[in-house]
Image (cartoon, rainbow, N blue to C red; front, side, top):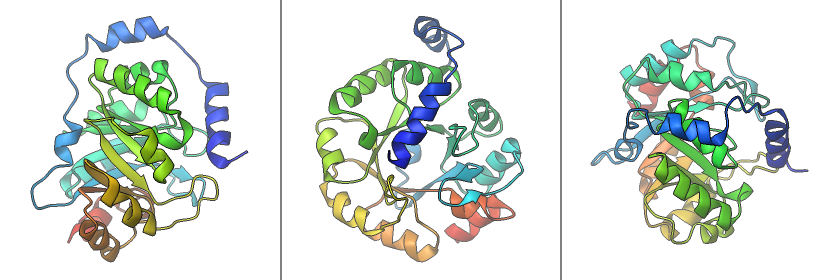
Length: 253
């Protein structure tokens, strides 16, 4: 079993549904409108940074012990982040759903829920938890599931960051519009990084392009910008720093 499917299996096996999908939907539709995630990725003549909050990763292990979400969110905002990504997957990444609300209440940035989302319940749960956008991973979903979840996210007024790894994923996403497309340089089976993936896929994407994973230096950022990226999503290299916000500032300097 691949690392991706092992994480998904554990997540579904341990998922606690405290409300029904109908109850979640009703609560979600009464909430204020989300912050504009897509707009945060379209700053003229600038590369947006989605700064990530996570505490562990399968490839790096423990990144930091502190869970001061509020400090991390305000530090990222103060140092130039355009949006936040919050890992909520518990087993491999040490996340919690409550971290979305903790981050959002501490800053004015739109917040992406980054997790291995699978069905309608996940979408409505994300909305009621305060997320402004959600990650959908094409590698673990069929085209039919992507289309279905795209429609549900639209009902929930959530933006989608649709993650791609290869041309097969791109084929699944054909015709899906009004989303941002993330190209992940990490192989979800082996965890290996290949920065050449964005070089192959970006020219084939018609839409907002986000480079994900393996970006550790200013040189990497310049390379992504030259390839046509509108934004980069960076987590590990920031979270391993004593002050992630200062690491972001140096990244952007």
